[in-house]
Length: 513
Ligand SMILES: [Ca+2]
Ligand SMILES: [Ca+2]
Image (tube, rainbow, N blue to C red; front, side):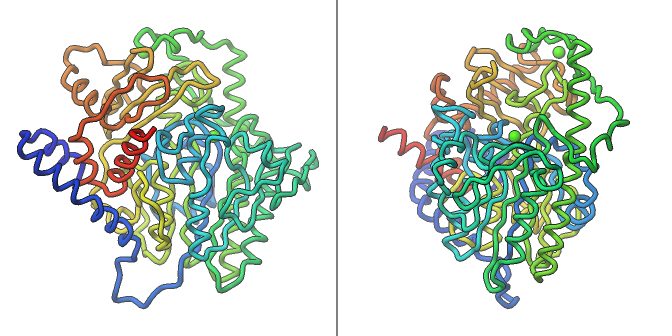
């Protein structure tokens, strides 16, 4: 059942709704059952396949529109799988996004809203049940190579290795040179020798060894999470300067001239100086250069999978933890609710499914990654808010979501807490300050004109407001309670197993606080 149909259900008269509510109440155990059984591969005629291996690649601050500069990703992943052109993170910042990637849940459920405590960073992250523990408990050999969750540093020095990981090669603090890695709990310090210390290569080495040495009779789950292309984007010497001739990035929203339609924190931003322009141009160039090293390492990992006879039975997902603005709207970071911060690459290759290589424009969210992996690997997991992409991979016309929640809690940058909803054609955002934004993405993909006060959009605003009441629940700490309605519980429950159950459990948790 699609959300559009749910929109229809939502307008039903109260007696009909009451029946639906009763059905939903009864249906909760059924919903849980369906979700668990949905992990069984649909095919019954074929012999039981070997359990798939899983390679999850998560880059850091990579925009969705940068894959054309990664030949291995293009030839080995995009040409053999599905490229989801409209993939997003629900909270555009490293730490909350990585928590959502590992759990399949939004920030309002993980409790990780930002990169500092409270409500953020490693101390807020409940790591007892994650993709790693699910896979490990199901017999997978698991390994993480790279970035984990911000503020893991102090626990890294104490030798802490989160549950579920057999091999743990994680940044104490992410960097290209002069960084620490905790290797199964022992800290290993790296200096500045390009031949032995460049972190993307060091992590590629470790991940390659993990693949080559894994017992042949055991499926593996590896997460490769290099520092690239995050600022300062220090290129490996081989690629240093390789993008020096790239054309400057000057979309219509670059250094946006008129921000009077935008919230006060955006209006407070100065126009760019030539120094700032040069800085962003330089960062962008170096980001492309650091991605060359990532691309090389991905090639090595695919070779290792092939050498060990695993490649043809490996699910490979390539994505990033958030996007980045390259000067759009006078901004050069993330956290804001504009598409450049929210959109990320998402490529899925899984040969046993015999997928016709294609680009798919359905709305994918980072909370979908964990349930997708668990579903394809037939690994049991708790109910989560994300949706497995498996139906979409099998059938481009499978029913799918038509909108999703964006959430942010004010942290180190002066971006007020907000909740937003993005549909295929619109984006609506409500800030803790009471300010609001509405963009018609079909007419204004650069998000230049905030239409929230346009009288001709009042019906859209009312519809999106109601939808956001449902989605933004609970709102980020510090924002006023928006409240949900019982109808919302029924609707989510009927529609999507995971979303509904997680919603209900959240309700229960809130009521027991
Ligand atoms: Ca990031
Ligand atoms: Ca404007």
